[in-house]
Image (cartoon, helix red, strand yellow):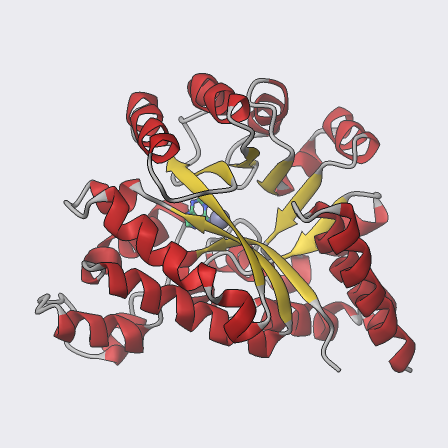
Amino acid sequence: MKLPLVELHLHIEGTLEPELLFELAARNAVTLPWASLAELRAQYDFTDLQSFLNLYYRALDVLRERIDFTDLTRAYLARARTAGVRHAEIFFDPQAHTSRGVPLHTALAGVRDALDGAVKDWGISTKLIVTFLRDRPAAEALQILREILAGGVPIDGIGLDSAEVGYPPELFTEVFALARAHGLRLVAHAGEEGPPDYVWQALDLLGVERVDHGIRSLEDEALLDRLVRDRIPLTVCPFSNVRLRVIDTLADHPIVRMLDRGLLVCVNSDDPAYFGGYIDDNLAALDTEFGLGPDRLALLARNGIEASFLTLGEKAALAAEVDAWRSLQP
Ligand code: ADE
Ligand code: ZN
């Protein structure tokens, strides 16, 4: 039996593996700046978030047709299944596609097509969270949100991502207010490269229910008190933090300190095609590095379940499966 996992911080565009990227380039007659898989992989040496985003947005050029978005999403779900993922709340960046001429509906409906078959095909329930690029104008995000609300493709929530420093959450207050008024769930990246103040803003101005990354919250004791008191989840992504040089090495990662501080943290993969592995790889590496053992692995899995947007009944059912897994471990 695999440890049943929930993944809450996963950019579907960040699951674009080099092999699929080359296949889609050939299918869509897109000329790539990289001559081979090896030449593309040689670009995966990032110095910070922006250096990664430059490649991430460039690589998306191969996604042109609705079926491309479906194939991308199906490939993730197939891999997630082998990791033991039972529920995934997936981020999708519409502006990364509309800004290069792909219609919103083509991209969004393509992802949705794959999610609609996810329970049947892989035993994975899903939610779809549209993430807005904070380094583009809030007016553009508002326009896209209005189009999505008026259109026929259902979503479950909104989030905020892309280059963080210089783009504080307060810029997006109106966007989040509109989403809340329509009953959407709210999350935001904050405290990845940006200061703890951005986490406060995400909580108090945007009203987010969950913070993506949030690791710089460790610099602010009052913020930690608030996160612990209100059981605000932080979706932590260890491989991402190391590869984007937010943390020097995995051995320096504060995940255990965060657990010990009483924070509701869970482990996620962020952009697994670029950062060296999927959610199971992240957990296995942490287990090796810190000797987490079955109790803390089960705690991380239960935290993911609690942090999700599943119903209480669905959470209880999955948590019982985690307990069953734990009872089979030494
Ligand atoms: N978009 C994709 N991955 C991201 C990350 N780690 N931070 C901000 N924006 C992103
Ligand atoms: Zn992210």
